[in-house]
Image 1 (spheres, one colour):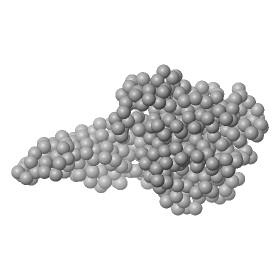
Image 2 (spheres, rainbow, N blue to C red):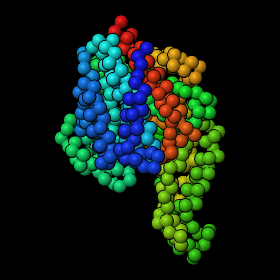
Image 3 (cartoon, helix red, strand yellow):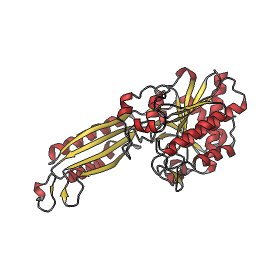
Image 4 (cartoon, rainbow, N blue to C red):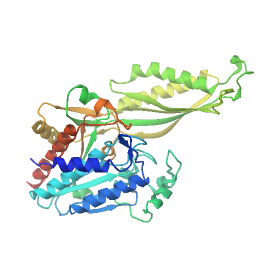
Length: 410
């Protein structure tokens, strides 16, 4: 079984954690100064083990192992949400780095190896997974031109230029080079911890449908406008969201989730009846039929409010991502490795969060591995996983890498 160096692995985790430290977590948004520092840090680590490494024109870090044999592509992302955790994404990149080292040091896999990738902006500061979409040839120049940072409004083109990436080519995946793509991640939920499990082998990654609901009423004076005369966009928004909370449980599946991420009232003043409202809304599930059902119900509720209420209500689709099934052979490799490392402490489970593996799955066999998140916390600076679970996950990950490369070598 391919083995890792646990001390070296943890040293990398704690070293990377120093770049952009925020409380006990990390603030390293895409293309920020600290994000760029972390990408150069990774390039240096990859070159130190003999990989050909670069940051490409969309800010993907790509490390190519020597050799002409079949390779495994592995990684995730290293930017973070604002003022968030130190492991979200970084876990998968550092597992890939350590597996690549272990393969190189073993000398047992001939011309094969592990290519390491840190995709740009999985967290969506500028757009929907531009790094992995660029890698598969699905990111247009027009999309880059239109993308702006959701926090500060900085255009993506300008951010890339400040990072020194203007004019650099955007690399695309050489499909014939790779056996598969493997990604590891913290669970970002509490199921593994609650069930005293160490490893989750992902079965599927949910699809996520994102919407903007726009409500147009009539702005007016809060003290002089009679209640029966009001076209209050805030009231319409509240009524619509309550209808969703009442009706969605009737048609959703057991693991379906839906979220109102933002409600904005216009003008948002205490003495003015709001004339406009905007709701950012999403739902997720791994079953396309369930997603279609939820979409149909949302359209029905929007139409009812638009028809029966005093305000005009319309639904705008922001983005649709399809669910992705993980590869059966790769799931079996992770499961077998987990049984060697932590017998009886692993399970099959879906991913309720989106990941770069979902983008790549239509193009290459993919698999994902989860380790526990303490208290189920993620996207917050208190996010954490024990060193013991980090090490166990890395051993399972590397073990599967070794098995897959050995099988390919014959």
